[in-house]
Length: 120
Image (cartoon, rainbow, N blue to C red; front, side, top):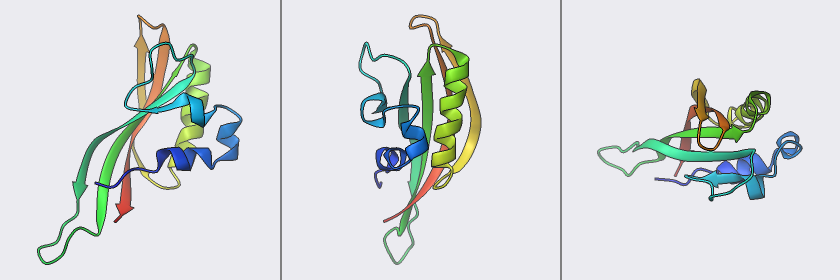
């Protein structure tokens, strides 16, 4: 599977940079314990190499999830919308409205699932 260019894509967007520091607030799989909110976690949730009988795969189809964690819903929604606007230029949004609340951390989670086709 190819590696998703999530960091590079988010870092390149100047409007998003005004809302969150991608270098210190975006994590693959899990945020370190004690990370101050808001922060973003993304993870690959499935994928498929698009193979042919007579040739190796020319692209990978990768499904991933992005979740924003924030102390209030307004900020969580705002960040989700900003990240979606950036990601949607490269990937298809599949489930645009993941909502959750972490009672222990007292954080709102807002996110989406997306599908990115990566040329190999």
